[in-house]
Image (tube, rainbow, N blue to C red; front, top):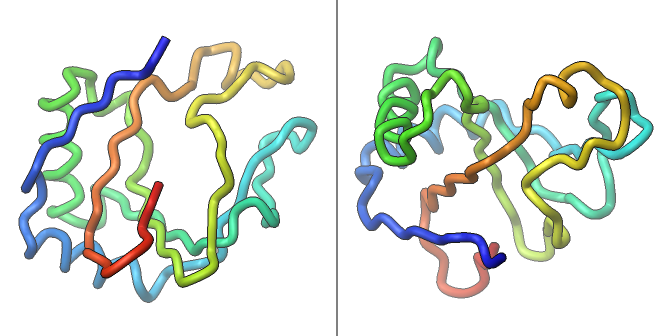
Length: 134
């Protein structure tokens, strides 16, 4: 059961990448994780040391347009998508191996209703000389 992987070169323009980076930089905060028994409350954790910003389509025409293009690419209505999450890693920061889906580990209604990830879409907004693995 190997997941399918699709690479789409130049899906975002350099200008779109710059716009996303500029919008995210001032609102970056320490990344968090949600684990079993936390009742949906995200907390800082040693397994995830990056910073994160959340960008909303209602606040940015560029983000809204990208959501529409992703919808067309994956053939899943954008109403099923999450908010755009922008991550930043400095040397030494990490997110340890994990799955991008949620196991049903409690009785919270949102899991029972099927709110889970079926597709993950990554955009690399900048290039680096070395590192940058995901």
